[in-house]
Length: 172
Image (cartoon, rainbow, N blue to C red; front, side, top):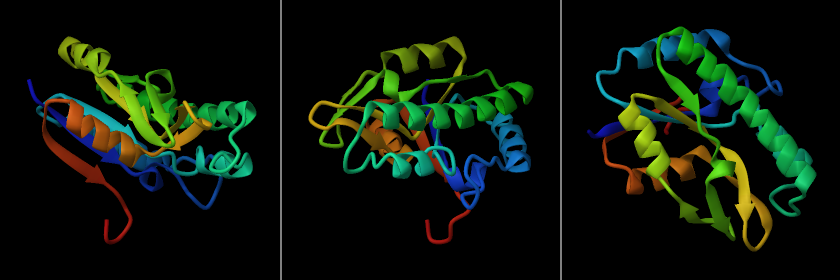
């Protein structure tokens, strides 16, 4: 069965002006809308104010460190968990899938992404929820991977009928 691949911008879920601040009413609204989908959905969300500040603080773009990887990943996991909890409250059988666990890059380009687990989750009736993250980079140690990059890679690798984006940024 073909799935819908849906990207939710981090700025929709979070207040980008205030570090690690959720937009709880938006999260609840979006969860309710996803419940109404008549197909299986794979969700990718951006990091918003969870992840971007930590990546900047630890200079992950130029000089990745293990501490920077850990702090950034922990922050995006918090957002992912909050979104999953809202989806579960809306009776969406959502489960978090962390890119750090199964995506590798070289010089910021994806070299490994095995979709078999995602496909099995979908077949079982789960809604996988991925997010922008920091992943292992075979040349640099670690690199940030955006939700948009993940969306592109999944769009190529998964059997999807539609790709959609939810954003509150003009022109996107």
